[in-house]
Structures are given as C-alpha cells and as structure tokens.
Length: 103
Image (cartoon, rainbow, N blue to C red; front, side):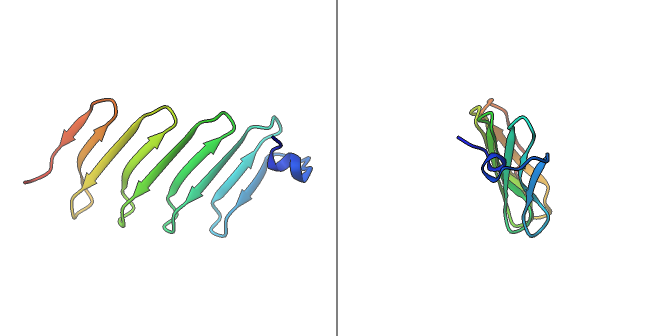
C-alpha cells in the first residue's frame, strides 16, 4: 500500500497535512512512517493511528475532560468528574479502581 506522500510523489519531508484549525491530521517522514489524527469539535484529539499498526482513541465530556481511553494493546481506562471538573472515579483494564464519588 502506498503512503499519501508516495501517491502524491512528495519529495520534501516531513509531509504534513493540517485541518482548518491548524491541527496536524497527517504526518509522514522520509522513511515512510506516517501518523494520522482526528479531532472533535472542541479540538481534542479523539483518534491516533500510525504505520506501525498502533492506534488509540479518546472520548471527552462537554468540559473537555477525558472520560474514556482505549488503545490497540488492549488497554482502556474510564473516568468520571464532579460538577467542578475534579476526577472522582477512575477504572482501567489493569484492575485499578479509584472511587471518590460521593453517594
């Protein structure tokens, strides 16, 4: 499979594509290594992928707090926040649970 730079016959590196907000959505170097990113409407990175097969994805709440993370290694974590934006709950696939929620 050809990379974007190879398809476009790009000769100068790094080859970078940015979105209309200035966020890097694609980056490729002269060795053919590439990475791509996606962002939500608030500018938070919600997806990353590279040519090595690694990926991760994130989800954020309306206050731009990270609430979910997952990657290609199988790791995941989730978080909850109080009304002031303080993290009150954390859980991960490694068995970690931190619960400071008020009942």
